Length: 142
Image (tube, rainbow, N blue to C red):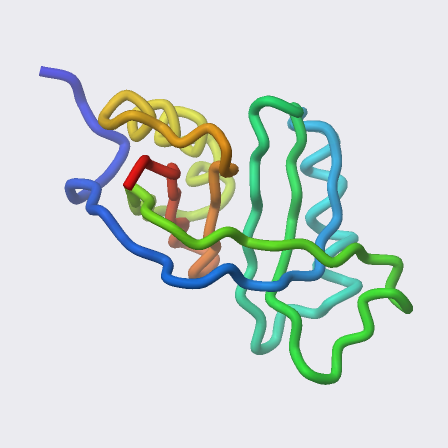
């Protein structure tokens, strides 16, 4: 029996709508990701924000993003506008303190990808619910 990185079984979720986000993108490599997050968080602030990352495996890119609020000015911050796609996802929840929780993201994504056929037209998603809770979403075919 294989051990799961998730404390509870993954579940299927439906995100009914696309969400417009402010975003910054880098190559999907740990050193660049570790530089991108602090600068993005400083630009947009954390208070009242939902924070996500999108991983485009085909393009080898990692994009940090947050939904646009009414008073946001992404252009003034040097940020791009993008879309967090809706649709069906297989969701797994990671729980634990940083930095150990981050070390389980890759294994968690691989575990989810092995469970159902992946919709490779949409990115993988990390949703940072709290400092000690990360939801991993793998897009699946409806």
